Length: 550
Image 1 (cartoon, rainbow, N blue to C red):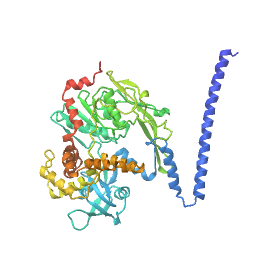
Image 2 (spheres, rainbow, N blue to C red):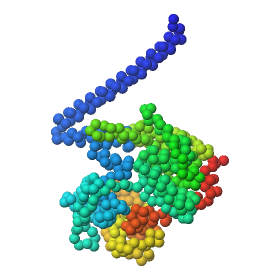
Image 3 (spheres, rainbow, N blue to C red):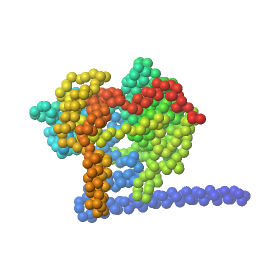
Image 4 (tube, helix red, strand yellow):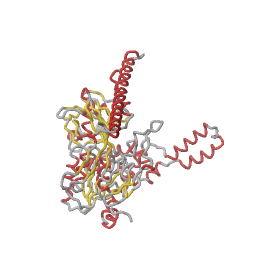
C-alpha cells in the first residue's frame, strides 16, 4: 500500500515529467511551425516577386541574417568557401605566396613571402598585376584576383606584370605551391639574456613551432623569455593548451569549456612534461589579442607563471566548433564559453542579452567578479585579460597614418630599393638624415594631404552653426581658429619624424629581408618590449609582481 509521502513524490515526478514533455512538444512545434513559415515565404518570394530572384542568393541572405543575429563567430561556410576555412585552421593554401591590394582599379603586390613561388619567380612588392592567364585584372577586387592566384599546388600561372623603371609589361611564369604561413614568423635575441618568440596565429602545429623556436633560443643560453601575442586573433584551442604546457607542469588545468550540451563541457589539462617551468616569462598583449591568445596569457597569469605586459586583451571567451551540413557546407557555431584556471570567463560582450536597438553591451561593472590566481593575486572576469603592467597604446599621428593609408611610405620604399639594390645590414640599417630629407622632398612632390581631428571637429561645428543660423555671428572667430589649427604638412614631417621613420624603415627592411626584416626593424624602438626587458632584467621587480598585494 502506497504511503501518503510516496503518493506525493510520485505526483511530483509525474508533474515534472509532464512539464518536461510538454516543453519538448512545444519547442518541437515552434521549430516545425517556423520552418514551414520560412519555406512558404521563400517559395512565395521566388514565385511572385516583381523582379527575377536568385534563389541561392536569397537563401544565403536568410541564413546569414539568422546566424548573424546570434554572434559574429557563428558562420555559414558554403562548399566554395571551404578552402578559405581550411587556411584559417591550418595556415595552408595552394597559391603563390603573396599579398595584394587594389589601387585605382588596379591590383598591386603588397608583400611576397620568403621562399615561396612569387619570390622564386622574381615578383616584388609594388609590381602591378595586369593579366593572369590572359584575363585582364583592371577593375577586379582583391577577392576576385585572389581566386585567380589560388589553386592546386604544381599548376602554372602566367602573369603580365608592370614594374616602375621597366618600359614595357613583361610576363612571369609562376608555379603554384602549397603555402604554409608560419605561426611563428620571428624569434631571436633582444640582448645577451632575453629572447623573444613572436606568435601570430594558432593554426595546426603552432605549439611545435613555439617549441622549436624556444629550443633554438636555449642554445643561446637565454635567461628570460618574451612571448609576443600582440595582434594575435587566436585559433585552435588545443594549440593554446599545448603552448601553455611548454612552460607549466604536466597535469595542470589550462582551460575548461562549458556549454548547453554535455559534449561541450570539457576540461583541458596539460598532458606532457614541460620544457621549462622556471625561466622568467613576459607575455605581450594588445586589444586585438583574442581567443587562444587570451587562453595562453590567462594561463600564464592565473598560474603566476609570468607577467603580462601591454594592453587589455579583446575579450573573446567563446568556443566554436564546426558541424557538417548538406552539400559539403559547414556551420561554424558557438557551442561553449571557456574558463581559464582561476575560474574566470573573459568574454567581454553579452550576445544573449542585446539592447533594444539590437546592439551588444559589455558586461556591466556591477556584475564583474573577483577571482584569485594560484598565489592569491586578484584578477577579474568580464572582458579580456588585464595586464600586470599596462602600457598605454601609442597611436600613430594623423600624418603617419595618412602616409600609410595613401601608400606614400609603400611607394617610397619601392623607389628606395630600386635605387639601392644591395641589401644593407639589418642590424645597422637606419635612414640617414639626407635620406629622410629625400623622403620629405618625395612627399612634397605628391598630391598628398590629410585632415587632423581638430580640423574635422571645427568643420563639423561650422556645419552645425550654418544649419542653426549662428554662423554669421561667429564667422570671424571660426576663420581665426581655422587659421590657427591649419596643419603644416612640412612641419608635421619634422615633428613626427621618429614615428614616421620607424614605419618607413620597417617597410624598406621588409623589401630586403621579407617579413623577418620588418619585424626585426620594428623591434628596435618597441615600448612594450623595452618595458618587458626592463622587468625581466630586474628579478626583484619581476617576482614582486607575481606575489599577492598585502
